[in-house]
Length: 309
Image (tube, one colour):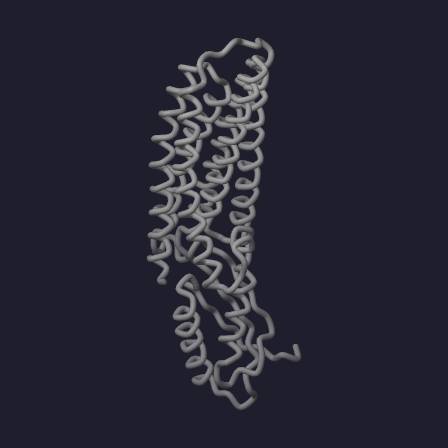
């Protein structure tokens, strides 16, 4: 799969998740207002926060995917991390803030709520729709894991594609949040005490705080600068070591410039008899091999050096 195909998959995944969240959020608002449930209204805020996050992720993919130009010779990949960081902050401020504040208010006031039937129905339908969205994201994660021969969990920990990680965490949090809302409604109805509904709302807010914190830390690390994943580095070393006249890799430096942009700088120990013209040929061959193997590798710089230095 080429770099553009991978980005298109990410964009489609974001669009599907965003479309689901718009429909789910509207239904939750109606159900929350009819029942007066704090947990369901918190879930509505959760869905609206996710929708806004996905809009920002869509912008991140589009703007970060622009090609390099004379003013930005290494491209615009890191701009995608800025937009993804804004998405995490928005989730932190809006969704979590509303859910916790509203839940505390309900606990303090112990306000009676109404009929929960509509809320239960909306939660069940929302669970089905969110599950479909999560399955699409999981398939994308598994595809990447198969490509690199690593576990899906490792892909999620180290992937430079913040859209995939954000969607997986958001969809997973959405399913957990729906479970919390359902539990809060059920306990409130069984006990006749609306405090359980408020507790569920606060729990949903805390869940959003955790997701937002994880995403914010991940995007900050990528903005500061992070090397390519270990399997990518191993693959680069194998390809460089297989080049003619190369005796060893003295040092390998990689930098993740964006979700699909990697910079490679390598100090190479060439054979003693190699000529300058041969080094140029090896450098050209290195670029061809690495970019053919991994289209995300956009920039390759080789530095001939003496391994003994």
